[in-house]
Image 1 (cartoon, rainbow, N blue to C red):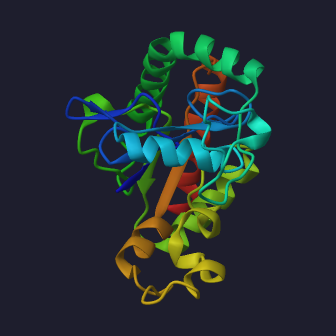
Image 2: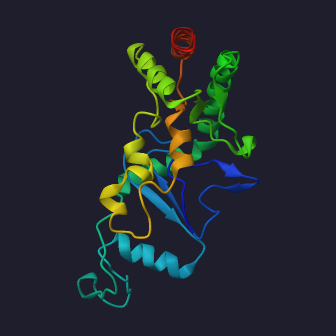
Amino acid sequence: VIEDSCQACGSGYKGKKTGTLGALGTYSFDYVKTLTTGEGGMVVTDDPKLYERACEYHDHGHVHNPEVPRGEDPHRITGFNYRMTEIQGAFGLVQLDRLDHVLAEQRKNKGEIKRAIASIRQIQFRDLPDPEGDGGDTLAFFLPDAKLARAFHDHLAKSKVDTKILPSAMNWHFAGHWNHMIQFLPPYRTDAWPKSEALLKRAIALPISVKMGEEQKERIIDAVRQAAREILK
């Protein structure tokens, strides 16, 4: 199992960190992620063979034989140029030292917004299998149906309150919209996950960040309440 933990750096499930639950875990470090180096990411594994293959794949296929010059280094697979720069690595190490602080602030900000809108009767917060492991970077809730969710999103947008992926970017983040890939991967089909699609279309996801001032949080809360008054009559 390759675990997609791109949005979940620092989160966990019942005492284990995300990224360590599968045979191989992946993290993204672009500018909107919990830990950022501007761009780039990281792969983690405790399997030596997978580690070697990942090292080769991210560096043109080099096997990194220390006994020969790099230009004479053999290759076993096709690889790509996915190497981060040394400067990005330095940024990442500093960010890693701040990770606990970032997670704590995100959880605090999320909690404040969630408590402030919890009285809205027709929204249902996403269930968390392990609330203690939540990284707090997203506040997700469901509306009664997809039409209301889209109207809710549009109302938030008019108030200049962004949503995160749902429902505005499902075509990028839900495999049911990936016909350009699925068509080459039988027996998978784009209509293979109807329950997941129905849930996602009803969802609103609010991005939560480490630096959210009181004014920003109040603006989000006011926009959600106003949307509820207008849309959920």
